[in-house]
Image 1 (spheres, rainbow, N blue to C red):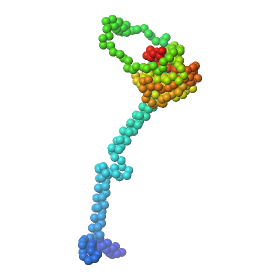
Image 2: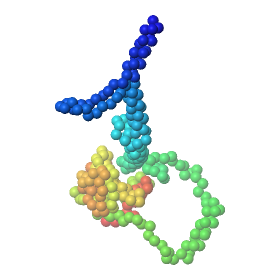
Image 3: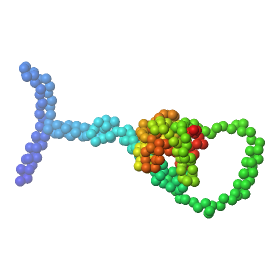
Length: 290
């Protein structure tokens, strides 16, 4: 038994180390072109070393060179960086869009009468907590009295030599006509009604953007423009609208046609509102309608 095993080992060893000759001949002339003496052990060693070198070189390319970007499943560092920046920008744009939509929706609710104007907060047009005026102490403090006295003394001799206008926008009359109902904050009529002939063109009071242009059951066709300096103009009961939401309009540009639409309309007229920083203001203080 032992002799058979020894015999097999010797035979395997002989096969591994027996020298063989690899010859390349010319097929026509049988001239020897190339020859190489090999053993099975040499072939095995060379193949093993070659495989190890290929694995090492491939691993190095994947780990330390830009060529790994061409291997399926691997992304470049620049691509990952760009993807991260795009994700952050997309998130910021989504938050900004959500805030703008909430702001415009609040404007729509206020201007269509879905909110109580008396409960508007100072910092936004959304409803805030009401304050009982009887509980507020309106007596000036000693520091306040001293400041008032100082201001009065300065105003006596102030010639306004360096005074500059704070008006940053000039408003154009949307229409010319007779005012049938004036602005009255006490009765919560935060607008003026101007009687007009049918199909009178209604114009933009200033450069701005259309943030609402649609039909409502109560006020008919309504157009709302947003201008600079926090000013918003509202045009209600129009017969038709010539602009769409998102359009950019110029001062004096026709945005609608006068009519009598909506449940609250009593005749052909323009119900015009003017807002500044979320508060209604009297349009006749800035615009001449008659």
